[in-house]
Length: 112
Length: 114
Image (cartoon, rainbow over all chains, first blue to last red; front, side, top):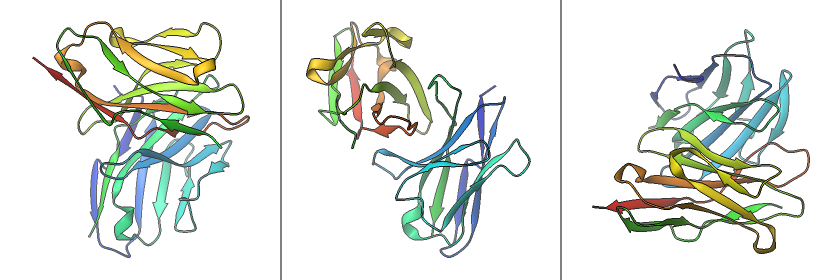
């Protein structure tokens, strides 16, 4: 059983629509992260979340993006109004205090 | 600012041959260094990491990497390639005090020829 489960595995959405990507860690961890990988490019950091608030974010993580842990279990990434350039694989990751990161298998987001 | 450079976007080796994937980083503080592998249509799997201590780090699947501060390098090696090693390999670094975000290199695609 994977330590981090992401749903859905693939989502297709129309430009301008809101999407919510979900991440469910199997056990409690200190840190939660979202990364993305545009097809054929490197993996890029979006945001990290610690103690129920954002601890770091990149320039990519603008006002269109938000994260939360609504029920203390799920960790979600919301994109309010999707653009074509948001099409990418989005990875959730978790870690404890020892920099042992575990990545989920990703959600492929396709914006049409 | 931190950065990671992976030399060679594609590397091809014969089965049984030495695998060498190169990674150089820039950092003004002692870095934490990582290698991840990505198989097609899958997520990132940690191969190994260096944080402190011994500079030669052994990971899964027979891979190892050596942290060389003088060369700002963290090259990944495996003595004998296997067909199942064919994948994309990413080097990553945390090189800013107090940060936890990983900065990834652009990746190296390893092909293993029979």
